[in-house]
Amino acid sequence: MRLRRRPWIATAIQDYSDFIVNLNESLVKPDWEALFGRKASLYVELGTGKGQFITELARQNPDRNYVGVEAQHDIIFYAARKAQEKELANVKFLLMDANQLTEMFQVNSVMGLFINFCDPWPKKRHAKRRLTFHGFFDNYRQVLEKNGLLSFKTDNRDLFEFSLNEFVNANVRLQNISLDLHESNMIGNVMTEYETKFSSMGQPIYRLEAVFS
Image (cartoon, rainbow, N blue to C red; front, side):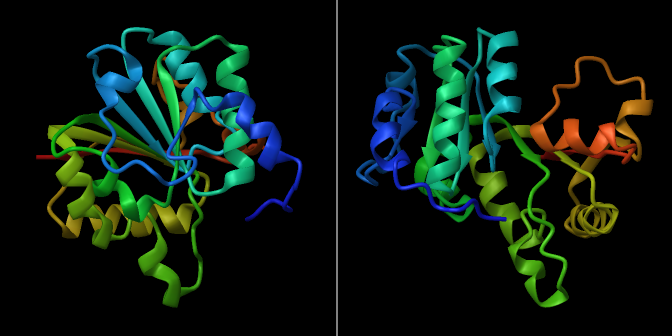
């Protein structure tokens, strides 16, 4: 779902330029260590939304670097604002489509990927747009370190079942599969905006980890 365009954001977003990479689409394969000013494990969230999840992860793990990928200009503004309000030095945001992943990250440079509550694209003819469609897997495997982890959460059972089949059919090893995350014994779960909303309504949250060897 796209937010209604807010013309004022085009100007206001400049206040957070320290947090947003490729705002003018001028960089190709950024030097992430240089941008962060240090060498640290790199984690990437695809579809970061308004940034609740990734900014909280960055706050909890100051020894790691985080990049939130978001295709919608108006949404990334709110994520960058959160990062500035929390005075985080270990998170950046990248304005791009998930299809461009290999254009912006070096081979085997990412320790972990997060996909949280992505668009389920419920119509069968749109299956190839789902971020857990097998057509994306080569890109994930290319940027992830060997045995790198992709963590996936959704409230949509149909999408979750589709995703399980996609990973299994592609011989991707799965672990820590949960059909009701908040009733599981997982420690340290960080919630997204959607997760907070759906779980408060009693909706089970589905989660898995896919290991790309």
